[in-house]
Image 1 (cartoon, helix red, strand yellow):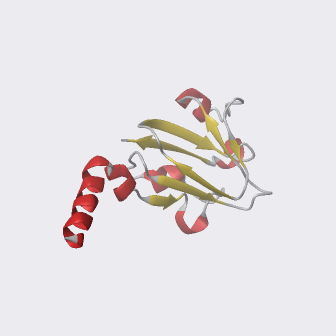
Image 2 (tube, rainbow, N blue to C red):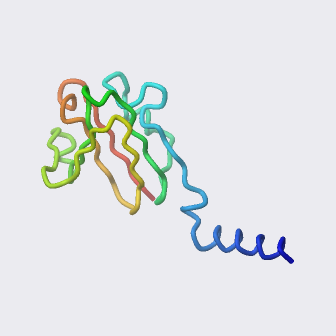
Length: 122
């Protein structure tokens, strides 16, 4: 009886909360992390992001940060949105809670090193 109940709960979780059960965690930039040494367009290529997935920005806190841009024009021009959060811990963990496009950049190195990434969430 306990096995049947456990199985039913697991099935319900997969059906009702698939993003929670199937969420993927991505370390942005993989082994190089959030740095000026990564082409983030290449890093995103071939990845599909879903609501519930998690991004981990790993970097030296005194050298970088993670800020958001509100739209593609601001992203392309490295303009951070002043009213949005600034992450600067060196190990920022962000859950993608809504479908749409997210624009992340380093306010220190966006212009010079193109340290920015655009994530489209399904």
